[in-house]
Amino acid sequence: MKIRNGFVSNSSSSSFVIIGVYSNDDTAVKGLKAIYLDDSEYEFARGIVLADDQYMEYIDVSFDKLQEYAKQVSEALKIDISEVKLIAGTRQC
Image 1: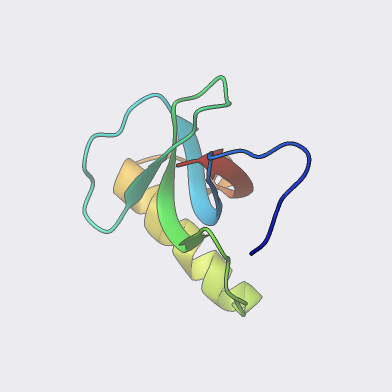
Image 2 (image 1 turned 30 degrees about the horizontal axis):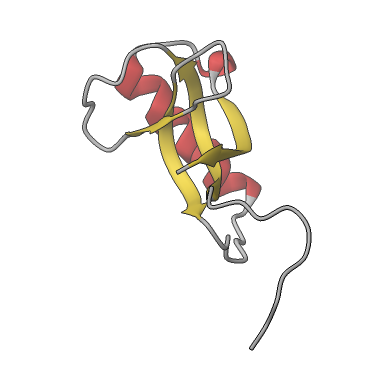
């Protein structure tokens, strides 16, 4: 039997990496996903999800592919490509 001393929490978190933009809108857009952010001035990160898991797996994406994803997000949201970012973080789930 294991005994744990100290602080114990039942909360869980999930790490994510997304090519997209911060947004307060989660309206469905084909090919894009909205991830809820509970610790941000924005409610969501919207774009193409590269990773979203409690135990984030290794990811390997070329710069060319990242540029292609940024262009897809730009076109889908009808925004300038310079507004698209690589967003990574941890959120509660």
